[in-house]
Image (cartoon, rainbow, N blue to C red; front, side):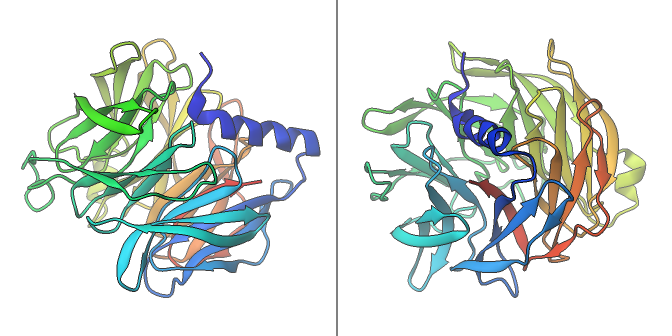
Length: 372
């Protein structure tokens, strides 16, 4: 089955093949923190791993996470402005952004955002508000008033972090029939059934993670059989078996991101982002505190992961990592060091090699997004 929510990625991948590997890649950076003024832009040269000078593309408060409309011509971000928080839409022309729509969310600022593959609505996760908001999109991509769904409860395993729900990521099953929301406070992946015709989401079930794990982000395997869930608090990845027909997720195995010795060497550690290599053979997760990326080899038959490398990011507090559309580079954003660094990806082993001289300065980068 064709993976609907990777259509844009595939289109982008083949467009790069058609123009050649040396064509610069447009990169947008979502930011949040002191010194950051909004969404920034640079181009990345996959020939030598170097960035062009970084410039401010859109001035807005706390555009922490970014996503693209399936047509590739609209960029959406979470954001804050005077008197409100919510979602904002920009028309994309090369490295330029032009705002054309914004809509407030009544439950606070979002920490993640994703557009459904059909382009008719998007979801945001409100970590502090404990909710998911559905924003309808018209044919031009303009945002409509959101419908908010509140999560309830809390696992209460980790005091101070899990007393209440904290949705941390939003996304969709490969066929677009389900929305999935990892909730750090519940130790669950909350699963919603999608009715794209209205559009609405309705509670469907949960995938139970490890106690005290603190689910943060997740990705589907390329064969669509598994979910890789990143547990922020335990620095681990739980593999789930995904039943696309029933819309259920069953926990299988959990692999630590760092050794006990590595974790004990730091005063603070937590996981932040997880990625799957386009070839499906490798998985990557970022470790804040240890300031590294863990590389895993993935077994396509049973979904089991095995850590094979821990690579320093050459920065501090990697809130986000992303793999270039041609799958030759991994970019790592150091939120506390105000840097983004490039690491070459070995296509055979999946291992990373830092590109000396690639570091570029970006104010408090916490999201990396590629565009045409």
